[in-house]
Image 1 (cartoon, rainbow, N blue to C red):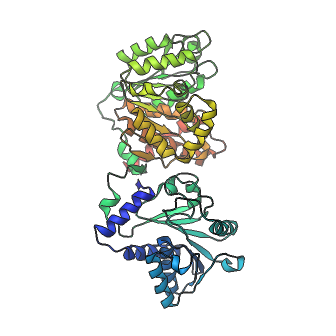
Image 2: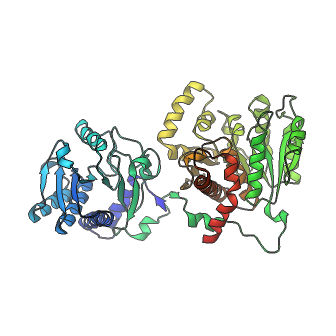
Length: 517
């Protein structure tokens, strides 16, 4: 499903009115009616208090109040702005409701008696908010959040930015949100997603071609999308048809990272997997692998890769492997940095860079622009900050900036470097050089555990080996990784999950997607 910014939704609204000649009053009527119908569908007839702002969001709330009132509900509207401050459409709805006898009054505060046992409809601010809420409204929202009342927000919880999901000083914590046309970024990212509650997306008459426009670059990854990306397995085929992946990973004390990446790669359909490891650790790996092959690589003598290992890696890729995944547990030092520089300058097969492969090129992202093959990077927010700057003090500020606007960060990086960025988190965001962005919809907090990222690296590499392009491999890999984690969480519980639980549930995740394919 497409996801929009406040500006994109405003454009859809304007074009609907100007180009398709659907009056704004009609859209408001349908919006308010959809809110009323959701309330009726969710609850028995109860007391409803509508908190109306002065803009069109407030007008939507007044329409909902009028519809409920006409159906015999106990409804009252509190207008938080004076009549002269109401937008033209909101004013028109206010006058209609007044003529029909809907109880309404102008208020600047709330108390417990006002909202006792009532369902609250939050129609204070819509998606257009771009500055912190005023102190007066802030106090009302704070009071509302301390109450135990059920809250339904109209379009978006008041005080949440539609563009980046940040709290604009104070925000309504809704139990339900009824939005129109398309979800907004503020519904999908945190903290906005937490304040949104259960989201309903209602059709109020926007033309389909506007909602599906190619100019809207952000989408969610849904089950059907992932199912359609699953690689086919021909009846007459052999292992060579499904790719040979070289995974360069592991160092002394971090052998598990390599093994988890390799196992998840095989579980995701790769035909062959070779693990490239420091030669002093080969015996350890030989004792633990079964289906995987092991490639000894030049060692510093400390159980970490030497820069000379780059020669073996490049040669192996040129002769035998189709994909390189590099980074899990390889450590980070001058040798690794030099090794990564040589690989990025030389390798011609698709690459997945994770963990220390990313850390090793911290502040040197210009090298990515000259890569001779598609590059997928899979940083979490901390690694993303280090990638952008080697200055530790600057990193602290960068982390905060990235958290506040993950999508813009991802799009900017992909555009500037020509790479595919998978910014891990809740939710994970995937961007490509042309500006397209996907927001993942699977996964859970139980996946915040050591090794989860190594598993993801192996899955994505497997799909590259099976012929998917970098964006599709990233999208499908992220979705199925989260889906396997969700299945594991139902069986193990989020507190007890470990990364290998995700690997073990991959077959079930594939079965779920295959059933819908």
